[in-house]
Length: 254
Image (tube, rainbow, N blue to C red):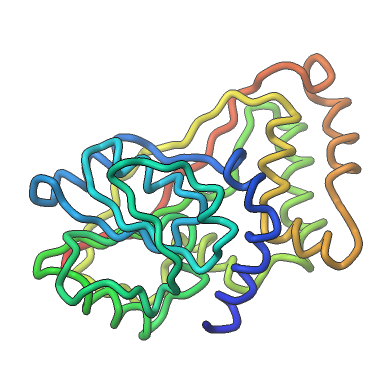
């Protein structure tokens, strides 16, 4: 396990239950498009599955899924599904058979283990013509400029010392990482949307790697953020506001 993957495993194992409850899911239209490129009843490897959000979406859309993660705590928090087999494994040594999967999906995780070793593993386990997709999202947006400004400052200033170096790949929509397949243009115009109260938003922010790193160093940044936002949020935080994330990624075919 490389250093970045080891850190990610520790960080997200520590908040596994919260991660399972408060991490977001992805646009259904993307999964329909992804599976539309595969044969019927496909087998998909969901690598770095965490607590299974994307695996559930894949299974619901009709795929059989092998969902792997290096964190036993994350897997223990995943929701069972008859078409999903959860398996403890590192990204670069999946334990899957040669030429066994029709597709590979990595949701909000590839920045922790991208590189030659992972790409070699992807090519080993994929059938000819398999589709590979790395998906994720950029920082969320709210309509109220005062709330957005406060949250931007928290993300980019307060948490600046605590973001892992790998985070830059997400903010670049994974550009610059070696991709293992012939790349296609990624679907444009897709968003992730939720209507959340302040408490729900704060719970989600609590799953961020930078927040967890700050806490491990002895400083929890969330109480001050929540206090600041309560004075700006309608109904002292009780109103449900629209929160939107730009959906990003890369995909293509082997």
